[in-house]
Amino acid sequence: MDLNFCKINICKIHVVITLVIFLLFFLPNSLNAEETTTKKFDIGSTIIDHVVDAYSWHILTYKEHHVSINLPIILIDKEGCHVFSSARFHHGEEKYMNYGICHEENFKKGKIVKFNDDGTINSDFKYLDLSITKNVLALFISIALLLWIFLTVANNYKKNGVSAPKGLARFLEPIILFVRDDIVRPSLKERSDKYMPYLMTLFFFIFINNLVGLIPIFPGGANLTGNIAITLVLAVLTFIITNVNGTKHYWTDIINTPGVPWWLKFPLPLMPLVEIVGVFTKPIVLMIRLFANITAGHIICLSFICLIFIFGETAPALGYGVSVVSVFFYIFMSVLELLVAFIQAFVFTLLSAIYIGMATENPHHEKQHALEIK
Image (tube, rainbow, N blue to C red; front, side, top):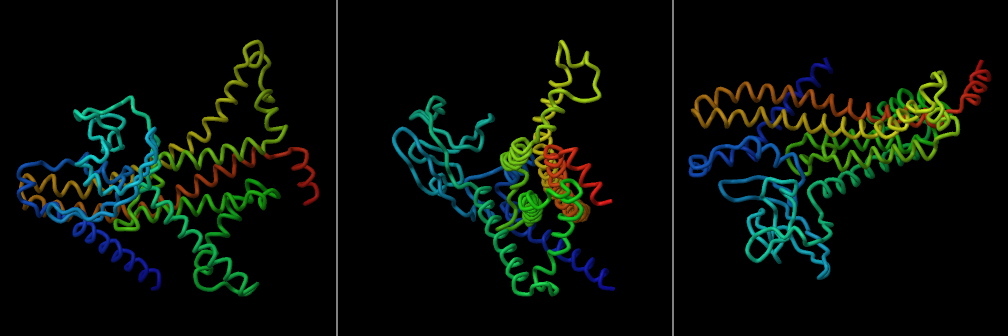
């Protein structure tokens, strides 16, 4: 009975989320009859604009009025440091101090560029962009959320001691024990305590941000774990910890792989080259997997909603008819994304633990430890 009650509540939550998306995100744009008659709905730009990073946090649009959180722009060039609000760009339509948002179809689209007096982009001008973007603000919010969660849990354990945890700690304890007992310890054995803080932080950072990214309104909605710069940093951290702590046995197996015929090692060191390439491809795979899966989930969910307005341009009645199917599939994908949010955090943490465990393993010590257990 309790399980069915939870399922009903989850469905209600996703219905409310869907209605919020319609009211705050898509529906206000469709109310502007003049705009819809002169300009067709562009599904590509609509989806990309809500997946990529931005210099302001868009909340909603009513007719032609945009409600956004303007973020600070910080630029350093040869003339000094320039700090101003992103409101100066007026949603990317205007320039300030000859700086503006690039709208051309190239790798700089959506980024700040320097313009010449004639309106062309000055590609030779060099500057450093340290602006607080949407993803940076989402990262700060994520850090504050994680600190609040784990400080609350830690204080709860300190207060209650060995007794049963209460409140937030009671809710998170099964997940914490799952990460410890099913991910970290099987891969690292007696070395678990040394790497537990990093792997536990890694799991909850990815998991929490995956969940927050599914919330369509502020402070959710930022595609943080779908940003390849974020996944790159996480993968680089795993790469550094793995290889810095690698044992002599780990590096010996890379240079002189056991069980491989000598003619694959000399005169052409084929297997050592393959193993060295593997050292770098492992973090690359971690980076791309998380980035691709989270971004793809957001794109699919947005695509179902955009279908309503694509068919609505043909005939309003057709748009209303398609909306029933689109909302159903959106809710289904949102529930599936909840599972994906956990799976991606689990896979990233598990592979990181396996890589670290393989690099820090000492065969002789492991054998001795196994004999002591027996």
